Each structure stands twice: as structure tokens, then as C-alpha cells.
Amino acid sequence: MKKLLLTFLSIGIIALVGGQAIAQQKVSPEKEALVKELLEVTGSTKSVTDVMDVMMGFQKVEFEKSISSMIADDKTMSAEEKAAMKQSALESMDRVTKRTVDFFTKEIDLSKALNEIAVPMYDRNFSETELRELIAFYRSTTGQKTISVMPKLMLEAMTGFSEKVLPKLQDFLKKTTDEEFAAIKQKVEQEMKAPRPKSKL
Image (cartoon, rainbow, N blue to C red):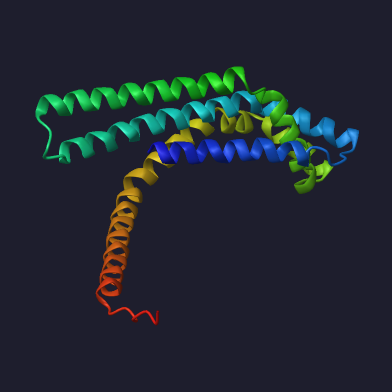
């Protein structure tokens, strides 16, 4: 689960860095104003923070499930050792989560980064007319509800994926990895047993 968390964070960092270069593309003042109005209407800075909170919470729950399962399956540790290991792992996860949140809070200006990414992104994909229509929608009752429930929908989607898809994916990856490892091991053993050509020296 830590790897999955780092993957999400890496994607976010790449997007922020890439956005700085993309932001240099010229966007008309009128269209830039429309994009910024859309961001304001949708509360996008808060939405980004909400999504991060959802992801962090989801990863924490999944990490606890994963580490509990791994420790429970370990036959070499006593019950006391397992309890201590689980406690240490959860404390480590809490520290990593706190440091990550602190990093985004103190080191990253989310509002500025969001503008640098969103303005050229919306400029490439929407006309001024379409942006006005989006603004009108998000000012509506249904639009405001969409904004408010989106983090909840995302959490439900991730949880559903974890419950229905992840176990099968993990089984498949374990089976595939075991088969590949066995094939590699067999190949290496055969190569080691094969007679080597005698040196002509």
C-alpha cells in the first residue's frame, strides 16, 4: 500500500512540474478569466485538498488491512511480537502520512499550482462558450451537489475497486510472479549445469 500511495503522490508531483511548463503557453485574458471563475465556482483548491484527504484515509485503511494480513500469516513470530510489529508499522504509516500532509501544506502553493495547470488545460480542451456553460452548471443546485459529493463518490469507488478487483489482481500478480521466478530459476540452473567451452589458452 505504501507503493500505491507513493505512486499517487509521484503522479501529483509530475503533474505539478509539468504544469509549470504548460502554463507558459499563451492563453487569452478572457479565457483565462473564465477558467479562474470556473475554479472559484467549483472550489477547486478545496476539492484538491478534499481528494488528498480521501486518498490518505483510504491508503491508511488499506495499509492497516494489508499489514495485519501479512503479520497474521507469519508463522515465525509470537503473538506478542506480532502485536509489536503491527503497532510499529501503523505508527510508521502515521508518521509518513503526517509528513506528506505537512509537505503539501507548507511547501506547495496548491492555489498557484492549480492555476498553472488548469488554465492551459481548460484552454486546450474547452471553448469559451463551453466554459460559460460549465460555470452555469456548477452554479446550479445540481452542480453544487456534484461538487460536494465528489470526494465521497471517489472514496466509494476506490473502496469498491479494492474489494472487488484488488484481491483478484493480487492473486494474479502473485501467480504470475511465482511462475516467472520459477522459470528464471530453472533457466539459470540449466545454464549453470551446461558444460562450458574449454579455454584455448
